[in-house]
Length: 432
Image: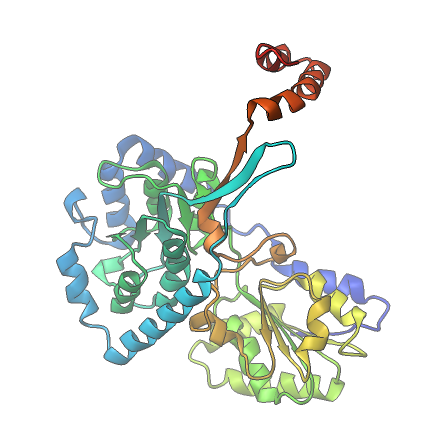
């Protein structure tokens, strides 16, 4: 049953903690299975990859057919409806324009004693992107993962997408072309993550793996981290809607259910300062559920993990404190004056400002990536961006005079730490 809470009650903090922790169970252990798959891909390469694809996706491949050919890609893309292609092109344009503004600037200067100092940004060479497959796939995720990488300067963008029984959504391949994906392989699961991380005879390894997947994919990403980088270990989706009575109840209900329909373990929470409005939203959710194609999923999510919190005052430090504790993946400020609450908010994956900015706009076409931290990790991490695909190198350059000014204290600190060779590398130059 959906949880109703009042922020003024003495047990509120404990009740909120309980609501947020319901999804924290370990669930089904997949570690042993994933470990075996990773080992087999490392040991047998293409042969293991072909075998697992036949076992899990009921698709018979050979090393030569793992990759979509250019001709196949064009042929499948032609099946995508023109209006869908146009919408994807518009989304790609907006996503690229937003991320182009994120390109970081290098630092290069000479300080007062003549030492050259700086920081230089560069992109990783190769990125692997996991995309859930089959007919019911998400081309928006292709754009949101790949375009920031392309803008960052990644030269090799590799996509893996399972094609159970040979089925693939044409929009996925259209999105891949728009996003600059250079290679596409029809593989999925933990075996695809292993192929990206370790490489096989056909698939060269990458340096960074991004993209969502099921529990097996998440566990595989967790295990290969260190060999390669990963974006994050994403949990089920979540939304926090902060709304006053000026936002119609049926609007809020649709927004809450927009994440609930993703997964039975998704979480949707409302904060409002009007108890009557809270009850109206709850009634609107019940009514809206009857119209949804994914009613069973959304209904389970709202029943088991949904929550409505009533606060005394909307624009208050107390409300902001609750928002920051929840640290939601998606935060909607569907209120009269979001600008008055925004400065107090520190923790959220993405913030949607005003009554006319539903989270769905961000999922598809606004511009920022929709790949965001979940399970309260927005308190210490950020969503996918150009920075996710870049790393920085420090620059240090001493003239003879600058070295002379720094040599003695450098050698002294090295002696203090008992590192003789460090001190010697300074003193051997004759100035310390």
